[in-house]
Length: 356
Image (cartoon, rainbow, N blue to C red):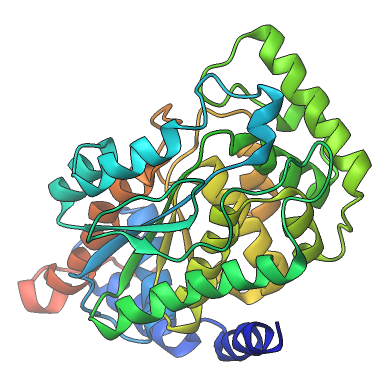
């Protein structure tokens, strides 16, 4: 535990604020481009943010990875999902064989899918799978904690280490993805515990459950909060008591990206819960996050409000896997190309805006 805790603390010490000088330089460059001020809207905002994250105006973001953390959940015993738990390892194999939606979209945008078994309750044999099991599925949060605090710290560390290894291989743009049948239940529990939101607002239909299962799911989350009594002032306590291994892994991915001054595109509901936990552990890390899309899952808008982030896309998606985040990669890249490849008023011989 001491080693894992030390690694986490070292990572947190490396997370610094955005580079204000680089952002000012980006602002000046954007204002020189052949367009009315502010006319490219969010693309300008993203370009400034990327400059602040990386410290340069033209970073090489060509190597892109979506990190898909996979883990099972003991709370599935309560019948909270439309799919059985054995779908988790089946879908992991689908990722590894290139057949899932995230694979198709990643190929489309030139990104790589990195799949990590951080807590699947099955042994999956595949040469491309990163096996970093903390456990074989979490505990049933309706009757006790999901994991120990030590396991939560370990899972965060795995996310950090995954990013560190990818940075060493030249990756500079990251996205969060996840797979874990039942994981909207712990995610909703985390949202409720960390924000004080009511269960009705925080809990949605996940994989498409019916009304009866939805009522059961809300009851299970209420029981989980009463049984475990997570401390809202201690994000690690909340994560350990009602979270998931893959959620904790994504917390580490976000913190690791921030420590390495790399932008991280946050996917939908589950990934945004991980972003909320990461922001509670290291508030400055929020500056390194780009929110990809507004999930159709109930509670995601509330999450965005608490994070103070505005999703870039609205596609009515709720698949997870990192699909919405991967769809956002081209927009991030486009913002950088516009800032660096557009002609300026001076270079194009175009008259600039007149001053009054």
